[in-house]
Length: 261
View (cartoon, rainbow, N blue to C red):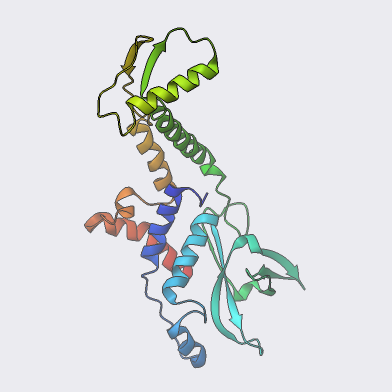
């Protein structure tokens, strides 16, 4: 799904706005941890990068795990977002644990009570959000749409002229004659004047136009993607302002901030 240009643009627009949120820690406990979190969530990311990545994982997978980064004494020194494909929930001594794997192949496990779980469309599973299967039909339409545009452009660019050629029976002779006609009349040395013997008849230029998807169909498909991600065209083009921006903030940005809190 993330390989779709439209989906990626929608996910990126949401994550870009979320990355501008300001993260604060409150309370008097764990002053050393608070000092580290003021600099960033971990040694690899800034808060902006952390928020962008977490938002992207959440929108693409409908689940995002945030696990504590610990030192050798098992003290929390930061936090890191985990892809749900690399995580499983298991029971150990009557308590749920999260087993996960980093991109470098290292594995770890931690009690679920020490993790954060952000979800969208959570229904059947106690920890994971539902899949994006509901968007499959729309993704299929996007694929068909793109294929139609590609084929239309190819076909419209394939042929420029047509003619009837007399006294040619072999296919090889026709190919040679076509190459000759193109070289003499359509090449850079033609001077803009086409000259050909009377063996050619009905020579005419083909007026071709690219066949593209109906604009109304295109907008319908785009709106279905925007609706699924709680976004719209103005957000993607950075044109939302006033009430439109306030509604988007309350409907998309603020719920994420509350979950992350």
